[in-house]
Amino acid sequence: MTNTMTYKGYTASMIFDAEDRLIVGRVLDIDDIIAFHGESITEFESNFRVVVDDYIAASEALGTQPEKPASGKLMLRIAPTVHAAALKAAAQSGTSLNKWAEQALGMAARKARATGPARSGA
Image 1: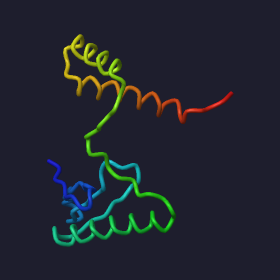
Image 2: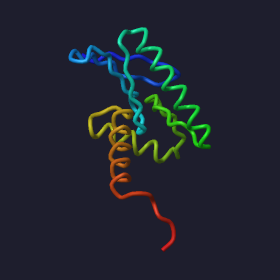
Image 3: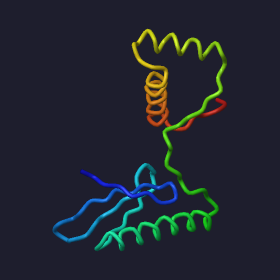
Image 4: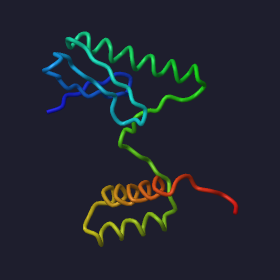
């Protein structure tokens, strides 16, 4: 079982390393790799807060936005005809519109990652 801890919207895994007697953590759900550890829950939590604060500060110093984990909530405004077509497609597949849209967005995201950034012009 993996435990987690949250700070400023970032979630870290908490895994006990019995050999080194450490709690090892990694910030989840972002592409940047942020890892840390602590010898106690108190030290782990303190180090987690430090690495998140340092990550945010370093991003700001570089003039970039720190990556934020997605919440899993998405609000879309789409044409009513697209909405109606999606409702029908979801019903035909026997799933909810949320599950159908999650699958469709997942397939589109995987395809976009596989093909690289979209190019304009020729």
